[in-house]
Length: 24
Image 1: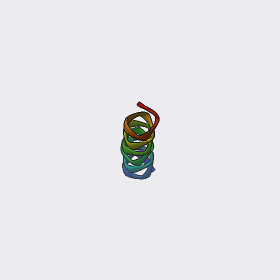
Image 2: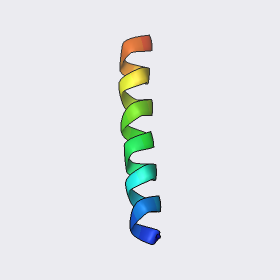
Image 3: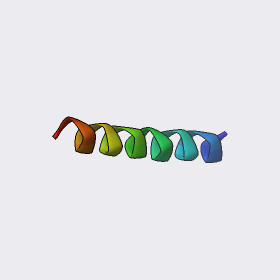
């Protein structure tokens, strides 16, 4: 379960980073 959470958080961070780049 911890692995899934880690992957989810990592993917979520990547999505937010990409979104911030597009917004900026």
